[in-house]
Length: 84
Image 1 (cartoon, rainbow, N blue to C red):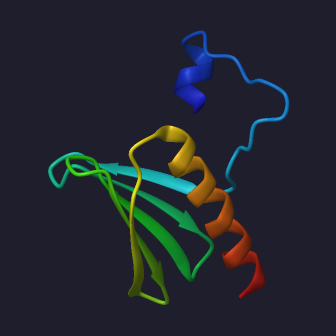
Image 2: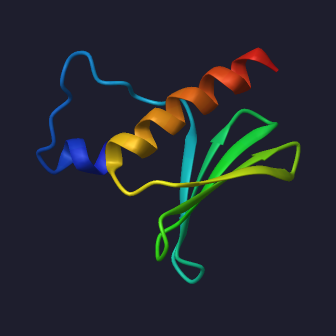
């Protein structure tokens, strides 16, 4: 996000911006979004599968075809992490 903004990207009012640490694992072709110490999402970029982990255990897997689907999952996951 920081690089996107530096390269001319714009924030728009009303869009959800997740409060998470995001890392990219290029060899594994994954992206990990960590919401605090207990909850994370792992996106498998080849398949668009997204695994939800709580306390190190995979609890669910979703198929996110569209960015809007993924953003909704991020929102729900952030709310879940805040409730734990």
